[in-house]
Image 1 (tube, rainbow, N blue to C red):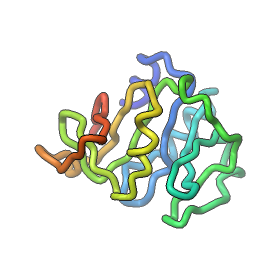
Image 2 (cartoon, rainbow, N blue to C red):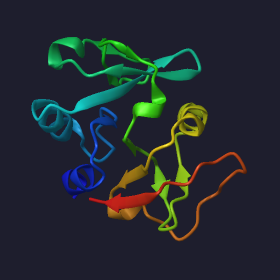
Image 3 (spheres, helix red, strand yellow):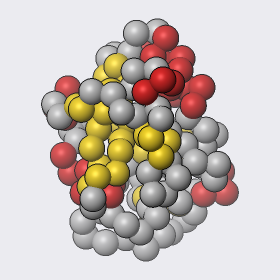
Image 4 (cartoon, one colour):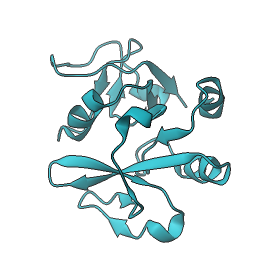
Length: 146
């Protein structure tokens, strides 16, 4: 399903996340898109913010964040205007695109800087009729259940 969206959106640069065990798995998708020549970006936690780094293969994935997330040590990416698609994790989503994160606000600070389709990726049980939202929350363009 995600590969179809990547092709439909004519994507070249895609923000993904390196999934934790309780999130929809993205590791195979990262490898597939990278092998097909896409520029894959992965976030890294730096202080209270996320920085984006180019995925440059598994050899560059040798840093773990304080949250246990495998992070890329690839080239820093700051040209947010050239991100074609962002695939975003969450603890819960609504069908309308509301997103509930883990509570630290990392994506809350990143998402306002992005001007591309935002795809929330969830297990079916993570899609709920309502979740608490705040005025600063950014809605997903679409939520995909896997």
